[in-house]
Image (cartoon, rainbow, N blue to C red; front, side, top):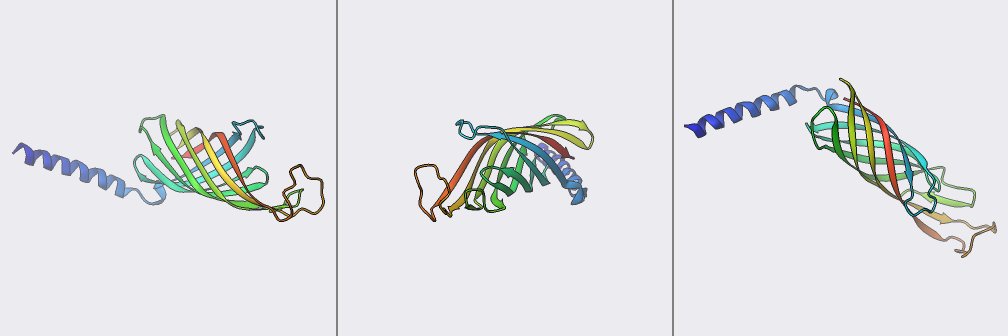
Length: 191
């Protein structure tokens, strides 16, 4: 008898939770995020701080799981426009919440040539981090995050006799530029 009563209570509470989630409209489960970030190279090469802007539209898949898409603007050896999938998992549902963040996508190059006649094309983009939502109001959180970013940009050298740093790579040389960066982000998350 106890087992049957327990099963009934659990099924009623589970169905009421499911109905509560189903009552939310699709639009109510969308949450935009707007952040500015500063990234630097831990190896010291090209180690000055550089800024990036990102925005994501996240969908609350489950009470602690958000998934969505995002786009950003960053400056490395050329300007890039990363487009990525964004997943965030909340470690708690309290007022001030910690979260894990994974972003994976592709870099699109903005303006594909620089001063040294090197042309660029896109490559892989990934970010792994941890963050903290600090509640500012009922509908707005301050978003703080730190993480590690890895990205690749393909470059082709069209050498035409300009000054070049040794060793001379030769005309038509192709490179895969890899950028590993630590990043700090701050922004707003709309609930």
